[in-house]
Image 1 (cartoon, rainbow, N blue to C red):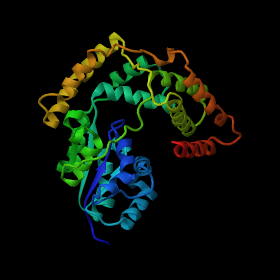
Image 2: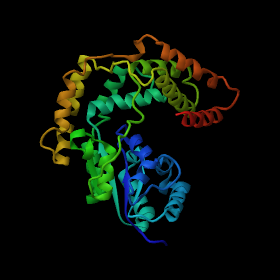
Image 3: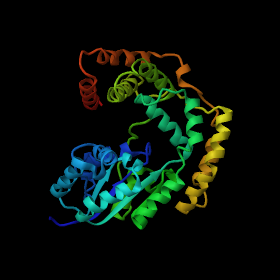
Length: 348
């Protein structure tokens, strides 16, 4: 076997926590220009297929073998990075087994880096994402009520489970600008990997959530095609997103998703102790998750309680019209979704 990497860093997300911005930078010429002793193996933007394979099959099957091959062929550097937010939804023992069996032979040390986001902004972003890809057709208030009741965005016990498996190799970071090196996830992550403060060029925010007007528009489409395959709905959502941003010239409607007074009270009550628990695990005595929750709840009821109630705009109409021909192609959903996903990537 070739010489080992000094360290492998596995960035595991969390969901909707700046992962796309980081991955696109790692795959861009920006890293080369910084002359970092770092490699990001593979050819895709992220390691999504590997993460999903580990969730579907013990050991990851073929994708684990491909990962071994990529690590074998990758140029040797001090640091090797794998990144995908879907690693964060794996059972910690599953990822631990993969690290031990596949990654550890290639590195002196393997670390996990986990960014966690404040509760309310995370909940809004997750809702926007599942609506965009057609995975959830519920009204916003129903989503808030159900996810709050389930405790979907509780983090403290999840953090403990990761630490139990990985110990000091698990690096927890708050997605709070004032606590990030350089004030952004890219600079912070590169600083962790290199052990030094680094300076990065201006990093655009990637994969931003659709605004409420855009969410209302894409939700109308998904309600018409809810019988179609998940892969097709996913591809349609991303193409609508691209087209909508094109027709709005990147501007937003200035609106945001608002909680009903009842849901706001329930949300704050449900996540107050968890926010304090995260601060304790991070060693934050102020300006942490508890403070972020209090601040966010001050105006949580201001905005649109349901994006589906918004009037269709010219940008929504144009994006919807451009997507429509893909839905009437006389081909299986699998073929259409694959072609549409590639088309969106090329046009982005």
